[in-house]
Image 1 (cartoon, helix red, strand yellow):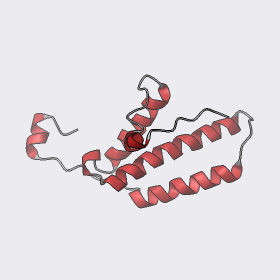
Image 2 (cartoon, rainbow, N blue to C red):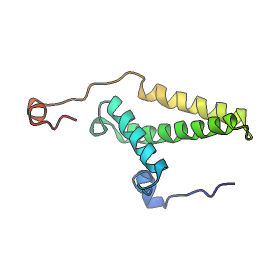
Image 3 (cartoon, rainbow, N blue to C red):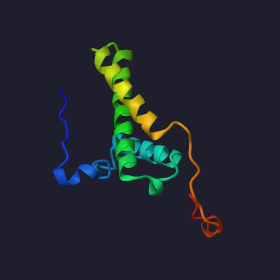
Image 4 (cartoon, rainbow, N blue to C red):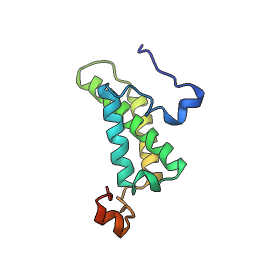
Length: 116
């Protein structure tokens, strides 16, 4: 069984930020968070609930990929657990939406190059 990191109660909302950024896992999860947030119109346009769902989605996606890797290597694979996580991820994506949303950018942001 792998040792699990349980964030302190006051850090739960920022668990991803608090991961050691030198690790490949932290870098990958942050990249996924940025990509998904950008697809939803940018992190600054997301509500607290949407940001929480983004965090859950990237964690579940990573978890599913780790399970699929175990299957590919011939290790133990719990199909029921995988299906449950996949259904949960699908539900989160349904709440967030599957279509990209344009980010609101002012003319001055566009001209100055701040429209990222």
